[in-house]
View 1 (spheres, helix red, strand yellow):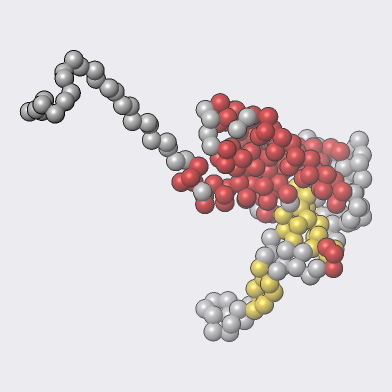
View 2 (view 1 turned 90 degrees about the vertical axis):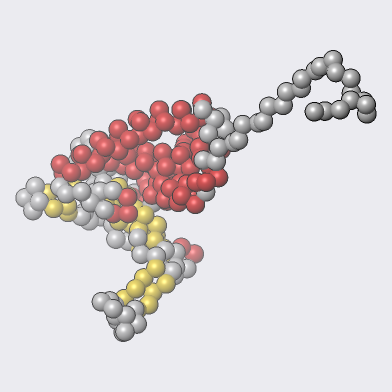
Length: 233
């Protein structure tokens, strides 16, 4: 697989991810829920998070900066790795998965690095309450920004509550509690990372299968007579 094919996959995912994030952020207030084509199991649920994929957090602003810098280092290192994989002719499936993971990491890194600088509203850390506080209204582009470089919040919006039920009353520890599948709210970048990682795990034997070296066959020419009268001892 050529490097330009991997770059095309990455660029396509980044464009779709950022276009959807910007549209959602500049169209809806946080917390807005919209049923896609009237379907109850597929919704747009706009939230923002300050941490890792799937809404995880890493402490306060210091933790966020560390996380963003870690993402930046990971993306830089990932760029080198991706080129290495292509040059060493890894399997097409492996390179596609690597490109998906890379694109997802880069997509969320863009939010963390720049969104605080280009939007007037966003989830931000309040040093007085020592917690992240939401905002009201719909965000718009602004040169002032709601925060600074490396302090932007990640936009999530995809929500698939396919099954809503309750655990049986006899179920240990959580009997009678509400159960929902699938509950996380995520974005295209998160999905790209997850698809890449899961596909690698499922098809790792195929992707990492080493080709057995072809058996060399040598023909030895001799001057021996080859007929029925020659006996091989």
